[in-house]
Image (cartoon, rainbow, N blue to C red; front, side, top):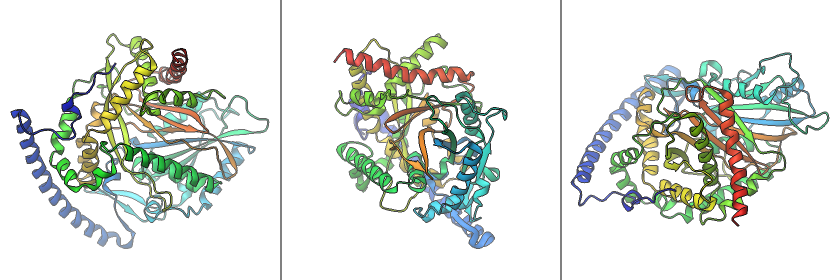
Length: 533
């Protein structure tokens, strides 16, 4: 069980009276803030000179600097921060015909719903001058951004799931087209995927949409794909509208949350957070400073395994998760998923390590805004991150008690002021620095054992008259964190993805077993839950 957060931990702003050490930290924080303000002023002036030089050099081709919230994802190796959205499509076309047809459809798609900023990202190339990333309006040929790969054995008529995960592992670090200067790529595969219960004459073809994280966060990418590529736009519009209203109401209900609208509109409160920023972030990091285990702390190789796991046909695990989360006030699907991940990780540690940590730090992306469905599509990054301490659980405690504890931890983590401070720092300070300095400021990836992303559900739909069978979403690793779980639902069925650095888990089968255990834990949790009803 989780221990309850102390009152001092959950206070939105630290008290300045009483403890001399706290007062000293406040003074140091203020000094750092002044230095940051001076640095920012110098950087902005220098940035304007760079902008003027680039305008003179490139003329109308110069598309402006990349926005601060996007540029924080541009590192030394830009192929590291790529999101892979895997779409399985059922079609009566064989793969060769399907790939040609799909390429033609992508090229001819006008994408009329895009905002000019999104079109700029799609049609431009990205370059760096003195560490500042900017766009050049090159009118990218879509043909250059559509690639066909082989599953590894050209003699195969069908690829197995293991073949697909090999391709996905390659795509995790494969450079984007034009020497990594564009932000997206569409990958098709020569062979269809072998699936169970396939209809006669129907082939399951695979398309991988690869987007650099600078293109946008997961929510904006899903919004972009659904509104540009699906056939029934009214159905998608209604679904997305329902999701955004639900997200708005959830934030409105959490008035004490660090991401509430009232906080964003309270300038005095924001000023307080900015003034205390360095102290707040430092305090948050101190909670996890000694995190060291077999899945965190080792120098990463940058070579990845990517695996996925989906529920069985007709299993309805999502319904089971909803029943469990409804047992606790404020319950959420993310909490149920984190319990399953926690229990699977405990199994992994028991099998592979002499020391089993009692808890591990987890980084959870927190959306600060939601896409506006009535407006043009803007692909952007509007994420912060919450750090929570996740206990490694087992079946000895009831699911209800585990869920109550994890929900409390999540609520406590997202109510911490460092969520807002991290967002402000990224968009109003760090993002204006040269890209080679940016990564030094991010600490969530330095202390987290793993990241967890939960993407909103997608209804059954078709794309260019092909039936979408399933969607798998793979998020990139960030910083020194080499383990990332992701969850998305399609047609009310679950899909989990896992990306892991090969230094942490050297065998692909071990990574696959870990992810399969997550779904198995959900099944076991539900069985236990029904027994205790």
